[in-house]
Image (cartoon, rainbow, N blue to C red; front, side, top):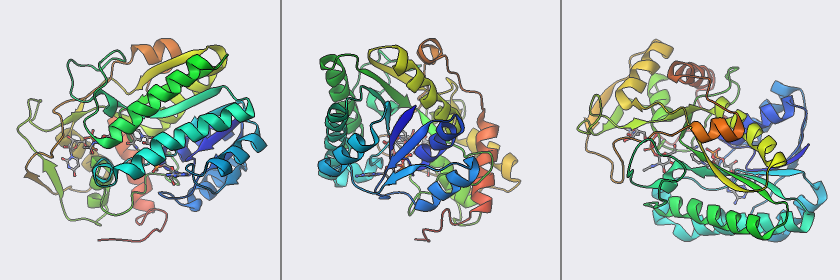
Length: 341
Ligand code: NAD
Ligand code: UD1
């Protein structure tokens, strides 16, 4: 199958490329490297012993995107490209709407021009907002609490409308919970620029000595140990969910939203303990005030993914920490983008 992958050089994209290439698919990556490195694609080539097409351009450039899609003529599109920092999305909302919403519209128009009717979209559990009940199932109300989340909810709605209006269209909206971990080789992994916003990359940088101490954002939540509880999903499991979603799109029509998580909540303190076991290093922590906008607990209902995609998570938090540590300890500065602190 020919698969066009926007944002393929990024964290989740690069792990998905490994599996797409290993499965024999022909791949074209479209990425402007706004938040990634071409080195990631070199590593994917080394890991798979296969090559892929590459167009270095911006999804906001509708003409460049349309040229790339029509030239490659894909059977399916996987749409990772986008901006994902919650705090930045409040400071630069128009950049987020242009990239995540207009970029998605440009992609759908390009697919129309190329006669491509299958798309798998990177959405987020953040579209649910405050939990009315747990676990989050796909029918939970959509009420994002920040501009980033609203761009994902809008893009989901636009893809749904496009699917209704396009004969034979098939769209799978994958709502990721908290992707972490790395490829078992330790050759590709998450390489955040600047100070990590998310827990696992921050913990990894404390373990490797790049940062002194983890700030725990609140230990007075209504959870087992008072710290925030999340559904961490191994990026290799997440990549496999994309291949399953492409298969699903090949045999169904319409638009389906599907959670991608393990269904298991892990607290901050539990994750830190798992990382200490994996790395053999102590992780210094200090408790500070809650982070604004955080919820106590978030975890997925996983039955729809099992039913529709025949996919389930295989890896646990120890696997996630072990692979994260392998990547972090052998690539202390990530792909070499340099330090900010
Ligand atoms: P990432 O930043 O590592 O990857 C995104 C890729 O898109 C990067 O390679 C970046 O260079 C590229 N890109 C950004 N803007 C672009 C533009 N205008 N034109 C072309 N390429 C552009 O992020 P990721 O963690 O791999 O996330 C991939 C997708 O999954 C994103 O859409 C993100 O919102 C979504 N998502 C991520 C998480 C997470 O925690 N990582 C959770 C839920 C959803
Ligand atoms: C964040 C995003 C969310 C996104 C998700 C994807 C915010 C507010 N939300 O959510 O939109 O979908 O990532 O992965 O950024 N924590 C600490 N110290 C830290 C960092 C985090 O204690 O330095 C705690 C948090 O309070 C939370 C847990 O660790 O309880 C996980 O945090 P994080 O990795 O940022 O993920 P989310 O909060 O789920």
